[in-house]
Image (cartoon, rainbow, N blue to C red; front, side):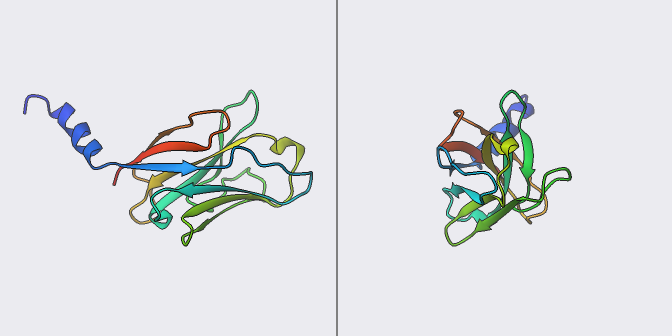
Length: 140
C-alpha cells in the first residue's frame, strides 16, 4: 500500500472500544474525615483494565495519585489509596483523612491492560472541570 502510515492507525482504531467513566460531580468532606470518590466503568468488566487517578489543584498541572488500580507513586501521602470492585465495575479513590491541601479536582482514567502489568494504550480527555463522565478509547 502506498499509505501504510495511514492504514495502521485506522486498523488500530477499528479495534478500539468506547468506555465511559462516570464520577460524582463533587464530594464533600471535613478535615480528617475519610472520603471516597467513585468511578464507574461502563464496560462492566473493570478487572480487565488498569485504573489511574489524577489530582489537579487550582493553578497546577494534574499529578498521578494512584496508578494500576492501587499503586501509589513515591511522594504521594499514604492517606491516599485506590481500589476496584469487580462486582460493581467501579474504582475508588480514598483519602483516610482529608487535609486542606486535598482541595482539588480528582479524575479517573482507565487503560486496557492485557496482563495487569503494562498499560498498552490509553486515549481520553476530561470534558469539564467537575466531570460526571470522561470518554476513553481503549485499544487492545
